[in-house]
Length: 315
Ligand code: FAD
Ligand code: NAP
View 1: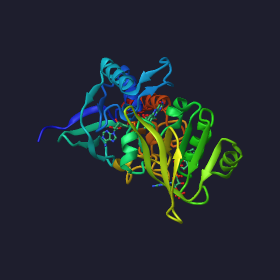
View 2 (view 1 turned 90 degrees about the vertical axis):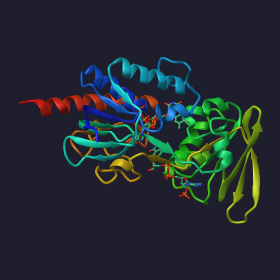
View 3 (view 1 turned 180 degrees about the vertical axis):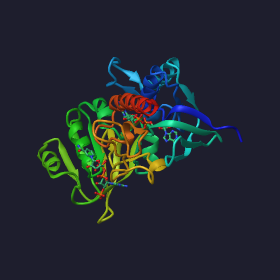
View 4 (view 1 turned 60 degrees about the vertical axis):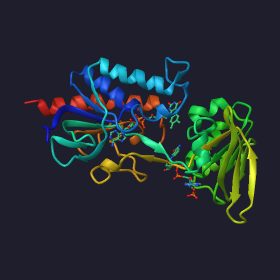
């Protein structure tokens, strides 16, 4: 077995949070090692146009992430194609085990493993992902100006997505599997008052229907969970908003987490419950979940790590 690979700062994850942390940690001369995981570039690699990254009126998600990777490397970060399968935060230096067989040791760790939207798991949903099926109204809502869309879910995310979509769409149908929402009452009130919103209670999305050439959504089929009746709702977009799952599996028994699995950080910082371990991006954030906020937190994590390491080094 080869010797462990030691670094001052190990960054786990290659989304906007991870790459931004790598840029800052490199410029602090910490020679960070960044492990990319099984989705190099993170969630933005599964979308098309990104129109809210400052400085780019429009950029393709994958292209933006290639640029971020190049930026991190140009600043001196070592970017490694590997996936961390286990992490020991119980003693310093911290130890991470990669799928490649490499053992990484680190004086400080920045966790930037992101979150993944939950999906219904329907084959038709998979087929139209990125072509009418989305899990991010903030990202894709703009493309549905003057069109009908549906939103699936009954929590805060679904209600927020539905309300946001009324800014663009002509009609928003919220499909929920029960007869009451679990979102906050004030949000429900706003939803009920909005003339563009119709709610389809007690229905479960069964199928997304559309054209193959070009690929695009034309309708969804939803089943009444009480009667079994199926109805078809014409629409150009289907937004799945049934929750997000933060990728906190690696640390779930080692760090304090919020309910829902998001890593807890000390307010206004990226410090987790273990000194020397910092968390950034969607892994810690159930509210904003944007590329730019994740990048901002990546910057904070690198600065927090730099200061923490300097304190450890002080005589
Ligand atoms: P992520 O981008 O989720 O990256 C997580 C990284 O962690 C990945 O590289 C993964 O490989 C790595 N990882 C996970 N586990 C491990 C492990 N065990 N070992 C090593 N690495 C690991 N936001 C916008 O601002 N604008 C948009 O237009 C926009 N469009 C979107 C479209 C879609 C379809 C989706 C799903 C999201 C969109 N978002 C958009 C949200 C945005 O993508 C996220 O907020 C952002 O990517 C979060 O960045 P992150 O760095 O926290 O994590
Ligand atoms: P959530 O509260 O877990 O709600 C998920 C919703 O999706 C529920 O209504 C659930 O139905 C439904 N659902 C789950 N699986 C489904 C499936 N397979 N088929 C159909 N429907 C399904 O998730 P969330 O709305 O993403 O919120 C997550 C957390 O973030 C919450 O704590 C929330 O308060 C918070 N949040 C806060 C804000 C804010 O403060 N502005 C915004 C967004 C999210 P049931 O109701 O039947 O279970």
